[in-house]
Image (cartoon, rainbow, N blue to C red; front, side, top):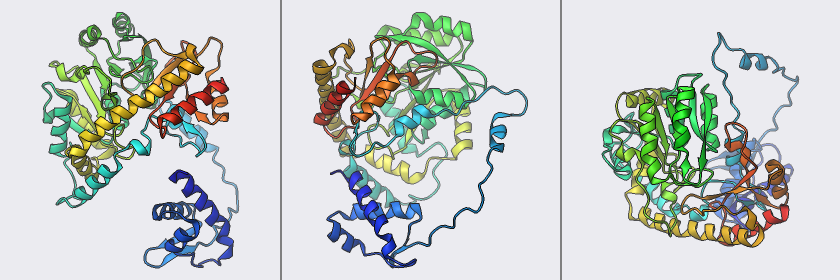
Length: 472
């Protein structure tokens, strides 16, 4: 049984036993709970934390855990209907904003213990460098000034590491440390495009990009893709038709298609954007998710960009841990000052302990070992997914198989409802992602995205695909 289910079960047991104790009565000690239920100290601690969060118990360090007083029942039903008007009627005539985060929330959903997770884009805990992270956190905590205020742009040593990792002519002074990739995307779009403006996006594209753009009052305009990535033959027309000044793209292992932008199109994207007087926001989210059998990777677009067209986004979250929300946002010229102003206004700075931990992690030999192990593990899971699809659903296999990222993009037969297929899969005990949330306009067809990074083992990936086949 995994730890998540153990925590839930222990919390349920303790919740059911609370009536045995008077208000203020002390619960058994952690050691007693460990012995009685045969669980680890971590499981006990997390189960107690759940009950504390619910208000069922109170934890007093050094004294123990006690039953809390029941909350008083509400005496009247509140009338919140006024908020419908307040949230919809804005002064003047600003651009319409949308706060539909269904795609983002779906990707962040935590699945039940008996459901195989082929939905999430985060690493399964067994693939995360937990020991290296713990060691880095401990070393970071011992650094002098670890809890002092960091520079607004980020720790110079961490910015320098990002600059070297991105490569090319990028220097430390062009790097801002961000609170993960999603935060960096938010800063970039809010900085570079005025409310109401169009922003070009790949079609299909990452739902988080669409959510950020719409929440900022921007209008996402899709540019179609094919097997070689963004169609540059349509890109110039899209800039001309919309007069957009921003394009967001993922040239490497694109989400959801896993395509890699073809070499001849890489320069075309920058040339077309430069002619349109536009920025290219390069979301390089999956560079560290390369597979062990991959050929050499192309350099980031930002590595060869003397004119400052590219605003580059990357993060340590995907290859490390969902909770290591540390990333980089890079730019050249006046755009960098705009990014700095918006980011510092929104969040002041990224907490120093997180930055120190990230610096300790990437500077240790354990980081390189982790990336090598991760490349092998992701390749194994992809191979398991492909083999299972070939055996059970061969008609859904894409023409090109990815050599990086964590996902497969499956085209369903015409007439299929992707949401109904997703619901049927969940009833079979496997979570997958419906494709319609990846389109800024009408979908080009019914799709599913299958992730394989959140599964515990390659065998679990295989079982998940078999459950999906039964559902379909």
